[in-house]
Image 1 (cartoon, one colour):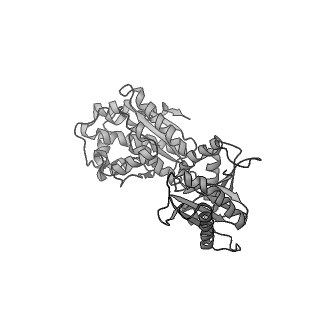
Image 2 (tube, one colour):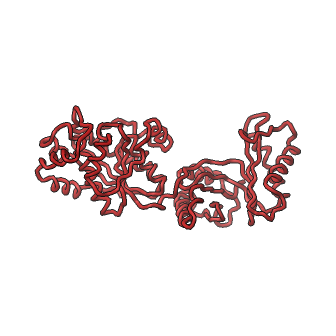
Image 3 (tube, one colour):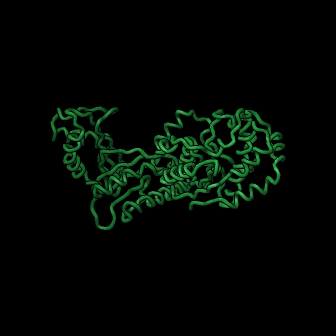
Length: 400
């Protein structure tokens, strides 16, 4: 019965003169996901809303298409919520008649003898003869006359059923369901970044958070073959597949850090190994980012979570590069991060236990406050430091 889907945004509405750019980006992203569901669907902007309609001469969505769209739209950043709806003429008699026809089946679907009910009307068409409040009263009264006074109870705060009604200049719309979406800004409205992605819980969540602010991302991951198994890379590939469902496909750069780690093991103080690994990772990531026109690096670091993530050590690691480093989770509690990981479908994969590159030759007692000059002194002990990194970069594998 649905012949449109009303898509609503929130933060985009605050963008002033740039709003048009953000709206276009949102529409492009919606069209992109619809290509794999029904490329004939039409997507258009009409004053503060985005509308999805069946393509060609079809009057309504079939159930398969509608369910597929409902399952994918929550992943679209910039979209706050959406409702499958019925487009109608701007005619109160037609609106009332349609609401009365739909009500019995909707009320029955709750399984309750007296469900809590409310109507929410929004009237942007100021020439319409009824106010929003009068529309609400009209529809409640008509449905009560049809179903009887004992068919429902009015609850304006905690309703089991909400009938939504929008009155616009060109048409009106009725809907009963309102689905939450990701919010934030459309992916592509901010520059591309490069995420340092491990197989843990944090970095996939940091990736999702940065996408939510409008930045598409490529990925770089580090392994230490033959000291880490193939499963280390396969796990990250699985996470990239999940994360790419929130954006147009980003590339994965796969880096074998083992040769550098052996050089650190053989020449440097044990307690500084992790810090030296991380500084090398940042340097490699920066070179890839500059080459691929990514404007920042992204990590899943949270302040104080492990020894390398103290204020002093993050500062020392940061100073290995000149590029901006974004840390969306720097102040996050671990339980907050886990909750998001479960929401975005990465938690199950992240929980699979496989070794990562930072565990290879890991120090038994890592330094928690290593000054930059100490790190530089240790790096100077490694023969051919730059040549080692250059060879590693030349051997990078890319999943496009």
